[in-house]
Every structure is written in C-alpha cells, then in structure tokens.
Length: 181
Length: 281
Image 1 (tube, chains in turn cyan, red):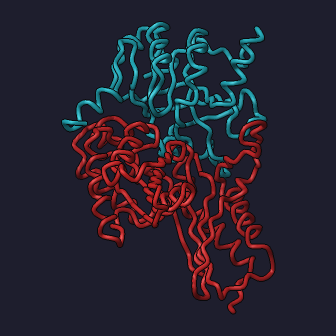
Image 2 (tube, rainbow over the protein chains, first blue to last red):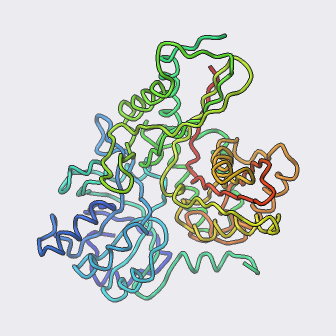
Image 3 (cartoon, rainbow over the protein chains, first blue to last red):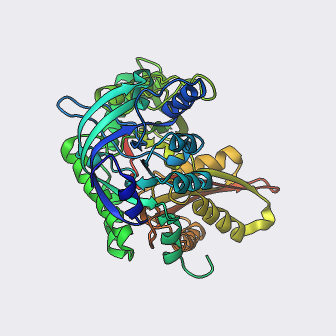
C-alpha cells in the first residue's frame, strides 16, 4: 500500500487489516507535538506540510556507521492524544504508534476520515530494515525526538481504529477474554 | 578485605548494558517460543513472530532490540568484605553507562529536570542504582535497561490488611487490565508485597530480574504467581493487545514482612523485551 494514504484507501481499511506501507512517513513524538501545537496557536505554519501525511510516533536509537537509522519501533501513542485532534483538523490522515487512543482521538478519526495504525512495539531492529532513507526536517535540537522524514518500503502495520468505528484492541480483547472478565 | 577496582566495575557495566540491549536472554526467548506455540489468536501469533524475528534481526545487525534503550537500572549486591579502590562506586557505574550508550549506539533517554526543562543529559546517566550489602567478598551487578512504555504502567496500592490475598490478586489483575496494550504485551509482571511503600516497589522491580517463569522459592508466593498469571491471561488482551491468550509470560512475586496496619502491593510491568544481564566480580 502506497503512502501518502488517500481518502479512498482509508475508507476501505478495517480494524485488524495487516498492511505493508511504502512511501513517506514523518516521525513526531511528545516534544515535537508540543512545538507543532505552539506554532499553530501562534498562527505560524508547521515545519512541514502535514496535509494528507502519516505520522510515525518514533524516536530512533542512533544510526551505527553504514546504516540509515538505528532501532526504530513505535512508542506509546496515548502521550500524543492531547495534541492529535488538532493535527487531524489540519489534515493529518494517518498515525502509527502502539497502544490505545482516547475517545476524543477516536471521534476525531471518524470526523476527519483518518486512520490509526499500530506497529509491533519493541521490534525496532526489524522495522529499521524497512527504512530506506531518513533525514531530519525539523527540531534537530530535540535529539531522538526530532522530526524525521522517512522513506519506507514494506513497513508492517496493523489497522487499529478505522473510520467506521472499528477498534482492534476492543474487539480482540472481547473475542479472547474468558467469561467473568 | 577484597579489593575491586572501580575501572573493572565500569567495564563490566558497559558490557552488560550493551549485551542486554542487543541480545535477549535464553530464558526470555524460550518463554516467547512457548507463547507462540500456545497462542490461539492469529493476530497474536503474528505479533509473536515479529517479536522473535526482531530478536534475530537485532543480534545479526548489531543494533538495539528496541529503540527505547531504557533508563539504566542497576542492582548491586555488595559483599561486606569488598573494598572498591581507585574511584567512586556510583561514578564508576555511571561511566559504564556513558560508555555503553555512547559507544554502543544506544538511545539516550534521560532528561535532567523531570517537570520543567526536560533537557536530555546526553549520555543516559544518571543510572538508577539500588544497593544491598550482603555477606562475603563478591560484587554482583545486575543491569536492567527499563523502557518507558511498560514502566509508566507501574502501580502502588496501599491496601487495607482486610483486603487479604484476594485484594492483592484483584489489584494486580486490574493494573494489567488498565495497562491494556500500552506496556507491549506479552509482559512479565513484577509484584512486590509488604514492607513499606518504597520497599514494595523495589521488590516488584527486583522481581523482574528473575529468570523468566522460574517460580519463586516461597510456596505461597508461587501459588499466587500461578493464580495471577491464569487470571491475567483470561483477560484476552493478548500479544500487543491484538487479542489472544498470552497477555503475560510470567508473574514474579517477592514479599517482605509488613507493619500491622499495612498491606502495600506494587506492580512493575516489564515489556516482552525483557532485557537484563548480570555478572559476579
């Protein structure tokens, strides 16, 4: 599946679908989100055009010599919940992280026709093999939290929250929990 | 009195943190393989496949298993007949952490002022060091690079003694249920019962360095481990929260006597990347 995601592609995605993504992703974590929202509050433009893009919640380990990037797995998405509805309103179409999102984020996904995906947490070594290029595009002073532009090939992700209200975490747990739980 | 050089401690700490970040222990790999055999959910099995493949990739590519190379937690058992020469013990450990994280291309994740500036210290120091003085003339160093996702799900409950065994079980199971997919399941659950508030938390953290799934030496605690593991796996959270039977690989309980008014229970969760290493000098 190619990045950036289109509204048509997003409409066809269902919670539980496994995807292999190829194209461009932008990384952003807590501190970068905070700075982006501060910019929007001041009426300033974001350091990159977020419309139609997908954010990957990730701060890599340093790249050893000869490698594009170090270990590069997802971080806990909930820390970004406070900032996410605002970015979705700005045109953000996809997010990749791990862990549950707030109801406000899930509502905003439906409203703005966007999707939340997860990568397998703690598999940064494996995921780094799918990253073919990485360059800093904003906030280099944040170190591991700087915004990177990544080119990926066959990056593995699973649809968690789709535009139809589907939620893999909720249905998965329900399906496998035993009575009384 | 046996003399151990501070420089040797630095070297050992640096090696241990590098190894722990690149290679999962045999006990963890075996527990993950067993989980993959037992997991019924296809999505859960897929996640376990990725986790096991990741361990091979990290080892082959010589890069960290996870980009979160952790806070540097260090447990020391210092024999009372040991004398550390040639430097300050804490400084020697921090120098080891600095070398491992800088020269080993590990991510530095410590920030200096936790509630204000949050500026990265640049070398992953300071380490969080816990010290026990024990009989003998050996120094045992155990390192635990502790990732933030799972650590943020730690909980302390100051239960009333009347809550009893059931209160303990319910508190732990609830903590795991609330943590849900966030701590990167399948997890290892460290439980500390008794002592005081800080002692319970320390017991829960220390429980994480036990060989995965090895029952505790105390029969009553071992029974509790089995019951909690069973209940937690009935929650259906599964690997990475995608739904499944294996939410936890193991429960490790450590306990300590408590004040007659108190029943502290601490829960410290460890993600599937259960990195720890030890050496005896």
